[in-house]
Picture 1 (cartoon, one colour):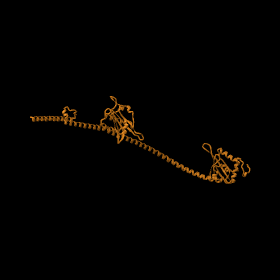
Picture 2 (cartoon, one colour; picture 1 turned 180 degrees about the vertical axis):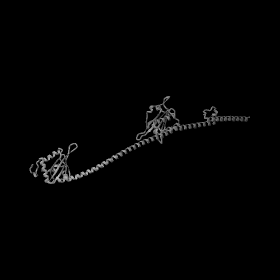
Picture 3 (cartoon, rainbow, N blue to C red; picture 1 turned 180 degrees about the horizontal axis):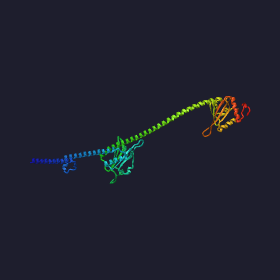
Picture 4 (cartoon, rainbow, N blue to C red; picture 1 turned 135 degrees about the horizontal axis):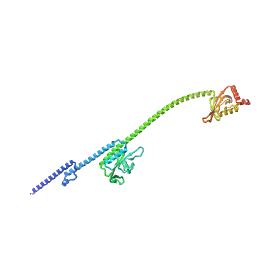
Length: 432
């Protein structure tokens, strides 16, 4: 009897187990069909089924599928975003200010942030680098007025130095205010992302939001920042290339202008050289003529120059030859060093009054040589004036009269004509 009871109980347990398994299989089938339809089963009403290992495995499988789906959705969101902004970045922007503002506006909207700032590094040669705000979206105007941020100043300047993302979830009350339908409110999170490429920072991206940014959003922002850095690098490189090209073109134009100016100068110099050659030829011809005349003068004429006081400043070889003085013995001496004592003072007084009046004096004069001998000359003394009219010097040209008899005859005729008593040699008294 006892054995029959035990067998009946075991049979009952088997039936219950079979029913439980049948219920679990049925529920599992419905569960899987719901998953295939894309329906999500958040809660199981039957507590016994909820504790089933099979159902728990199915729930774990559902969670895994949801995780995979979520991750796939996030990857798709990242890829779609990168493709979207790749198209924006490929645009050939003529107006960089409008380009950066549009890029920032689209980015803030895509990541569902509330505000955005874009800084670019200004690193001119010879100047200290700094950050300059080039785009702003939904920021308070007073915040946007700060166009320049020094390196190391604020979060943006710090992110530049650290070359790393700064992510704040405990934002100070006065950091910034977001204007919305709720009024002015402090954001829940702020992210500062260096725009980097090959370990070089080209700019800083700052985003503020009421809600924290998910990890996949941060991953997207990091990847996008590299793409933006690449575009900025290419833009700056193109700008520098254009500037260098413009400089090169200006230099080339300047060189062409200089070459043209040089060509004109060469032509002018060639013309000047031709004129100079002609002048040199003329000068050479004149010098030859002067040299020839000087030779003739040295043979025929006793030539001298004195200042306006009668001091000898120049004599030619003929003067030295006839007067029997060395040149050094005469230069700087008064002209009357060769005056013969036989000559009357009246004649020299007449000569000085004539030449001081600006007229030429001509006369027969007896001079004394260094050795005491005499020589006769037919003299012409010419006064020379400056352009201002002031007397400058006297030039005397004399012709040597070697025939004493002729010289004395001409001298006598001159003295009679002038009405001056002549002095006889050796102190003989004057006579008419």
